[in-house]
Image 1: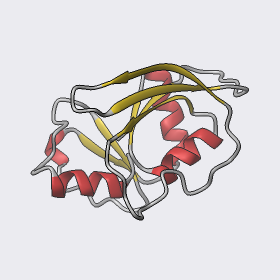
Image 2 (image 1 turned 180 degrees about the vertical axis):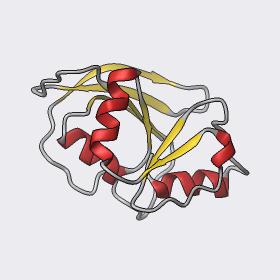
Image 3 (image 1 turned 180 degrees about the horizontal axis):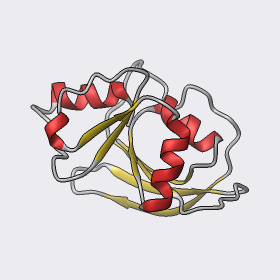
Image 4 (image 1 turned 90 degrees about the vertical axis):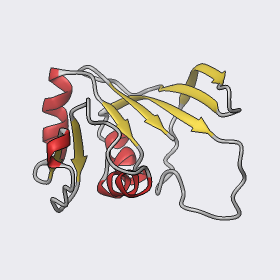
Length: 138
């Protein structure tokens, strides 16, 4: 996840909810407030570090439109799960800062108990030479 998502979760969710998972935060600066909760900041050679991690295990990327766009452009993500909540906003931050012409195929869609729609897409016409990263957005 990016640093903005990390700090938002910590500040608004009453602490760090992912204590049982190794978490990597992509940032230009190490502003880790949860070092004893399995959180590691990646501040140098970011895409190389992600590429190396991807070869060791599956990764889940949470939030961060800028980070996600970069990972898609560099072919480090092959699928995306988007959660659509049932609330209309008058304004806000774009999900993706840039919106290239990505071809997607819907693989799964379901409605959760609270009315949230969970849709999973794969990217078409992108060839990967490694295990793909699974991406979940809320």
